[in-house]
Image 1: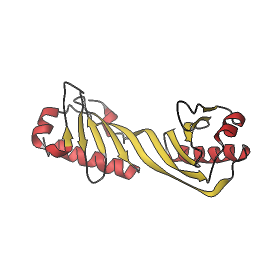
Image 2 (image 1 turned 90 degrees about the vertical axis):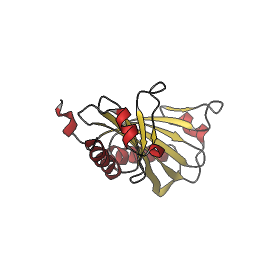
Image 3 (image 1 turned 120 degrees about the vertical axis):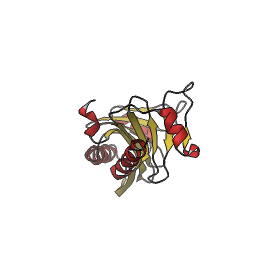
Image 4 (image 1 turned 30 degrees about the vertical axis):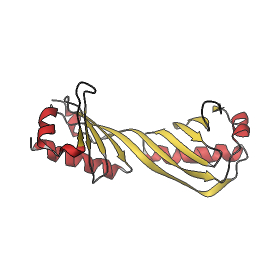
Length: 183
């Protein structure tokens, strides 16, 4: 067995959304900001790719944004600061305090041991479980507290999504370890 089990959950992606301005002229933005694409026929917002940190921002004319590709809280803060700077350079009047918050985290975790998914289905509440091995090799387990969805694979690898904080994710992992330790 690998020592990877004892590492904490690894952040794979963080999604944040919120408002940074009252309105944004997307045509002007896409013409003045590097790496900003606008194709209204395909998508109603502009797609802005920032390099430091490497994140993607969906920008809407309403002033709302969706940030994706973040790997840590520090990257989120730096990315938001960089976004605001780019917007101001492009002439966008931004809110003094942007109202942007984490809406979803995706993390991976290695339990470090085989998981008998059939036994999990038999042992636990079926209302919270989706498992159709002919369709998908993982078991989907929906927790109510914390409100996290876990994809369990027989290899022992687990993907957790839906948490808004690392505390949500860590509580989900602790619950799964306790639950799976009993079967």
